[in-house]
Length: 493
Picture 1 (cartoon, rainbow, N blue to C red):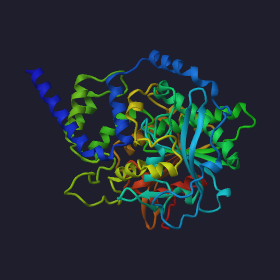
Picture 2: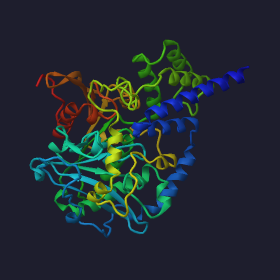
Picture 3: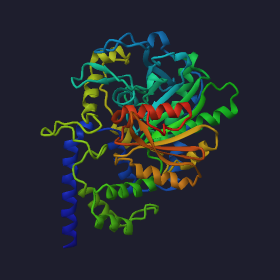
Picture 4: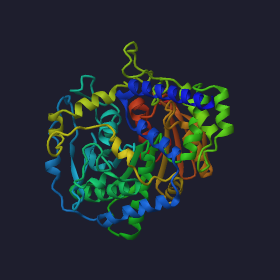
């Protein structure tokens, strides 16, 4: 009898999952990939020995780390004359192309770079990374969030993003690791990768990109990103600082990092997610209590009773847009209204159409014949190797290094909810310098902020997972405060 009930429960869960996939497949992205990664890790906890074996396996390709590699491209070759469908009034230079990070393997990473709209020579350089793992920083971050353009709903034309981050900085979008977006390798084994190799390739990319754009050497440099970039960003920052200690001619002048709705600790990710569900009326009191009483997310594995309550919680949420719990679904014909934030949940469809146009790929200097661009490479994610349960020790190390460390969260995302970020910060146990307060944008509360010792945490009100996309004006205010070294404005402006 119990076995039959389990089968029925499993069938119902699978039916819901298939339904969810069918409804939401049009906006699949880094959050979907991160959910799959977390589910996989919950089902199978790897031992420390297994993780060590993975790291040892990857160390054999480290010989090129940080070295100058002969390149095929040049700055002049990479300059974009004009993108198809580009609007009038573009007052900045933009570039895209490839930087080889492993000549023997034929591994090259794709980038898109936009100079600032005002006085670029005196503006800092910012590297933006999306997560996944396996998701495109250019297509997601560059074309749907903080980049200078947004793709219109015809999938063919562009409009200017009033709140683009290149209003304040020179912004570089990197497709990493190889296999993501337009990045590639001629060695198939490079598509089985992980955190360590990704950070090393990104570092090698930066060193060689600086040779192509020498005017940015030693310029103030920041790294920002979201979602699984909660791993990428601090790991790359740690690598940069470690090389700076030993290389007197180091050209990366790292000033700070910022991670948004970032996966940084698996225990607080799990615990905080289910508390977020309950506090936002997505699950019942009974189910939440069952999770609290039966789930020890610090344990090596979860109990059967915990899995049962988790399954009930996941089922009871229903078909909601998990990047923004208050937004409509893409592909729901009877619902044509946009969410309060104004962000179109079908945006990724428009980007997909645009970047898979031959003329667009030619303008972007994509190599070879027309490639199929995808927002997230599922095979990269499925074969992902090393991924530590927590990067909080790296955050703590960076906090002591003297660079700026910010964590921010859109408060309507349930992929990596604001609750998970607050729980993770609580583990750091750092003292408060300025207590929690509301900050403002255009006369309204833009979110809330708290300044800790060597760490700043900021929420963005009414934003889902993709903060610069959902709340572009508030995101730009946050970004301005970050690079200027000030807290978000405390008073109405």
